[in-house]
Image (cartoon, rainbow, N blue to C red; front, side):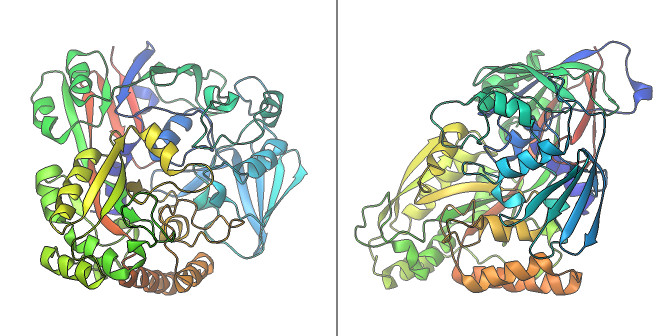
Length: 535
């Protein structure tokens, strides 16, 4: 499968806010009703770097750049850019753009957003280097001055959205809202972007209503007047809503209901593998686990324990029983289409007896007890995967206490302010840049320097300085062949460290009413679908 084809399918993890050619548009505008298993916790675009959340935000906010049909970076709020020096990027901003409240978009908003996205509480601190200088040249020109060359800078920005400086300051929203915040901020309940839709109302856990932005600078290619998003956690209720016509699109369709939906008269399933990698992580940094019966030490600091956990996972059983064949087991922390040398890696085989021996050699012949955090409404069959992992680890003597929660509670817990709050967890990651550097830096990089954004989502604290050094080389290397070899070396180090347990790339299944015409294309992670409703 080509990267283009894979991304078409991968886009199914996002929102079906869409367009097609204007020549086929019905005359009347329509309401698109969409339901997802998860909720939209916060409207603050810097709170949570999670794909579905970003997709919702992307209907309202825009970045300096976006992605085109063939995944190339294209202009958005920046009309053009150049690099007058290897470490200086100059962006020429689009004129005449208005925020939803009527404020003019200018360079001041870019400078403000660059500071805000790097501030404490942001989950997007890695998009702009901490030591980069952002300089306003005039109202419609901004320079980004780096300390070292970065050939993929704009690829890191397609989900960095620009906020209105005046609006934020007027509403005490200068600081980003942390994912672990216990009370909502103004920016988490209200939005003011430049995008094709405005938010008319937002009731977390209940409903969010998006209205067309009649003053959008772009050319709409849809017939929608509004999009109504409703979170429906129950699989059965969500499917019933689609089949009854209560909603037009649902995500996901449970794997066990795909045949039922396809056999219905008024809906069909659009399915395919995505680029997100689902994986297991372990706390390797604390001297004592937060959630375990082992006191005074951390079993996961022993490489033999990490290897034992890896080999205890029967990934083929998860594929056949839990995912019903709708997954692709992975040997790496990145989807194969995003790294051309992924075929050089083979996933270690399931070996429960070998895992038991490794635990015994590590000093745990009877196993131990550990807590596990898992979302139950974020990924396809996420809770079922975690339950399967619990059973598999029980075979080698490890008692896992599973804590499966809705994603809003899950993310708030594991990203708890003051330090990551988990011992063993399941997570999914799609590199926003579609490049290994993002995974290597954000997920696998050392987080031992509080002043550095490296390892921003490294919940388990895996750290290997040789790996980090290769990550830095990868960021600056412009020769593709050399760069791929550097990436391969880094992944080989992580594999020898048994740093993580990659599971698979899931297949996503959307249920779509036959009243809605959807053209899938790999535009970007914000507007991946273009849809027209017939009535």
